[in-house]
Amino acid sequence: MKPETEHERAHRQRWLILGVLSIAQLMVILDGTIVNIALPTAQKALAFSNADRQWVVTAYSLAFGSLLLLGGRVSDYIGRKNALMIGLAGFAGASAFGAAAQNFTMLVVARTIQGMFGALLAPAVLALLTTTFIDPDERGKAFAIYGAVAGAGGAIGLILGGVLTTYASWRWTLLVNVIIAAVAIAGGLTLLKHDRGEDHDPLDLQGVFSVTLGLFALVFGFSHVETTSWHNHYTIGSFVVAAILLGYFYLVQRRTTYPLLPLRVVADRNRGGSLLAMLVAGVGMFGMFLFLTYFMQLTLHFSAVRTGLAFLPMIFGLVITAQISNIVLLPKLGPRPLIPLGMAMAGAGLFWLSNVTIHSTYTGGVLLPLIVIGLAMGFIFAPSFNTATLGVAPHDAGVASALVNTSQQIGGSIGTALLNTLAASAATSFLVGKAPTALNQGMAAVHSYTTCFTISAWVFLGGAVATAITLRSGAPVHEPGELPVVGH
Image (tube, rainbow, N blue to C red; front, top):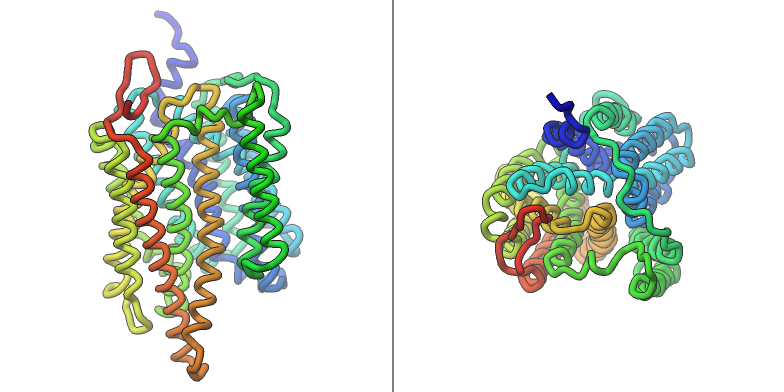
């Protein structure tokens, strides 16, 4: 009997590989929210100011957002398994360092290093998924599970963060990554086949520096808005620098022989529409998570644990429609009806949620809209991840995967900055001419949340129109021996 090759073994164990990749992806996604829950406790323990507190979040997003494209190309170069193992080990080490932090500086340095290794890890995960599952039917199932994990990760982070902060310590919101990474590393070393990397072209240094610094300036600009204003000189300067550098990056990619981001990767209409969907979802989801968390904790007086558990109906809804959309509907209909439908449903759910008042209850005002939003997200995330990586050449899989993560990260940065600013303005406007009583201040806070729900709803409706125009009609077509492609 002929001995089993490494490739055949990896194919036989592909569903176990999906489990490992989902665990790794979950760690990156939940880290965006799990630490947020613990921040007030960490602030008290390490004695840093409110202004400094923002940098615990910003340090991670700056490193992660600005280095994703480079991380994607590095994973193409050194091999996805190597990139995954290095990313997991580095992320775990940075998390342990952060958990041991004795002051603010240690914590921010740890969060920055987490972001750096996350930027290597996230594209490797999606690229491995893309190259492991090329059969159209199996790919739909795999991306349905991956999309559900990616979409629900933020809510899982809230639940886990609440439980760990309440019953253990804020340090465990970082230490838990060491456990997750250890499981993923053990699984990866056992199951993943060795790959030497698909791309050995010379590194596009002009592209690396222009896009990394450009994305850094863009994310920094949006982060700076939250603590200053849109008119601040540093904010404006950051956006100007970002526009110049990203414009220069585009010109370099058009002219260079070995581009960091081959423009063929973004030229496909379906890929462009999926990236747009991830950007819009990033903006809108942050609006919902952030301000609904505030509403439940500050208005309904839920504990951190209860707030996290209150998001469970949304997760269940998301998991159900992620399976239906990717496994049943996407192979027959293609992405065009599904993603815009999800956007429209999310908009409707957020409009519904914007009716909450200071007297609303969770059951009466939040539960049903939250379920609708969860169902909507299943139609957005899973088909978008799948479609964004369909038909990508193997040596472009890492950078294409990085683009998906970059779109979501930039969307989150835009959403957080924009909605925080608008919420503050709405609360201030509400209190004009009113006595600063506890009731009026509570009503002003709720008004600021509902304003952001409404704006997020309009963002999703705009996304529904934009993706309906951008995406092509038609079900995926697949020729034997070729990567599947959507539409004609």
